Image (tube, rainbow, N blue to C red):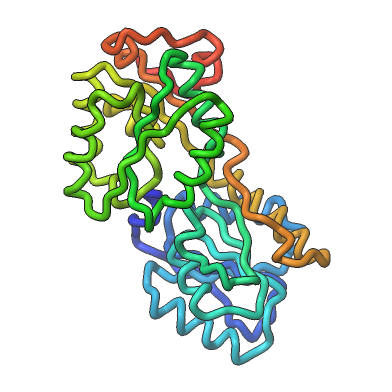
Length: 304
């Protein structure tokens, strides 16, 4: 979710749309994790004719490129790497199959009317996140979530169904502005056993995350974060996608199926199939939480 906000000096690697590549790869910006995803896509793609174009973080540049693309020989498929590229493609392309990669919460960008888009999201499967919380903190039955319905309402609806099946209950507070997060969390004080941070831009302001972690220590409530960085800040756990390479490889597998004749509407979005777990044992000690050995063995990073 953070790479969509990062732009470094971009080097354009592009060809003209008139070359009629089988696949056009539209990249949001020249960011390491996007480049990694593109390399993962190439490694798993069955198509060698891939032309790359870098938007350099410029929506208008992306739109102009797609306008030229539509006026000439068309590719068989467009790969949109990153949320900016996906946003431009959603606005401009309706009749060419599109596969995205390195996008979190894709349904917030893709309207229900879109029939030509699928892809590999960065979202970690909800089942894995709730199962991890349950394993680490068996006594936790009430999971607190603060969210913006326009950002992650669809995730909360899915999570409520899954939580019920796992014997958990979600305690949710909907907000529409970052400043509302603080009061919403304070109102949860006696209602929750754990906190779960969603990939929700409205609630990911640094001051809010810091406040949540202070709340966690004060009330001895474990927090499941969505990155190694949040675990280093003090969250008990951080669970994220493992690598851009694997997300790109997943996108290539979807593209291979479409180019082989599958209808895009029959190819559902995927979530991260490989995840990266960070465990903060310092936080565990402060909260009085015992981390099972099997969880520590799974962790890519253990903060001691």
